[in-house]
Length: 295
Image 1: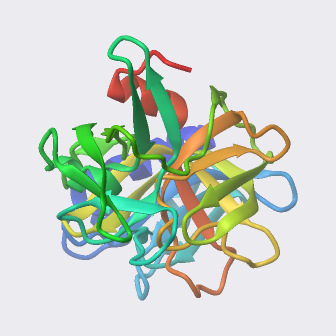
Image 2: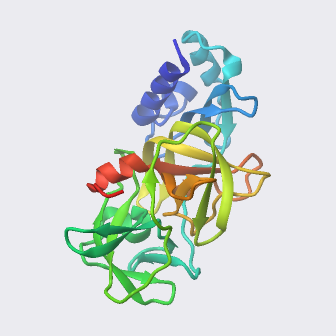
């Protein structure tokens, strides 16, 4: 058996019982004991299976399952951490948000719709799409309360469903000029690649891609939403790669700003005592889910 086989087994248990089959306790996908699992690049250059358990949960069952699958236990790591959080902010000179939303986030990029002759903006569904529950034409506001765009379409984020994308589109109000991420070329990231993002909260930061296939729960006002096959970026030098308000940012190659890999949507709570993690949708999945054929 491989790390991928073990990951698939743990992910299946997370979705079915919230991790109770692996870690014990009462089955509860609504209050999961296991919050995520992914194959992660370690600082030594080796690949490990990382299992994320809720604080206070005994993770010893992971080692027993690894032995059953014939996976060396030194290649399996258990971390105790709260669920990742969807990132919002309330003040930022570059931020936007749905008029009924909880907070603000970042514009990823302008996308030119040549068919309809209009510019659109790409961001996270929880930022401009009201988690997918917004209506077409809903106003998108800047941090001063001005209407700057109108919602086109959004992925609906629903607890109990497996998601791979948190993304939405809006068309810009005529005459409005917004600061956004710029042009982009979609590209699949590489493990260990140095990347950067420019967000409304923390501006430009750098990090390292440590996983291309991570599945996890994310805390949102609609409940804990499960995302599969996510990209993970680890901060450099202990400085968070992202903070609340950065959701919607593009994760780009550090040297070529036009090469974009992912759409940032969540991160670890700030202040945890291990390297801060940021989570992003693979951009190819974003474009496919939103029906985009632009580059």
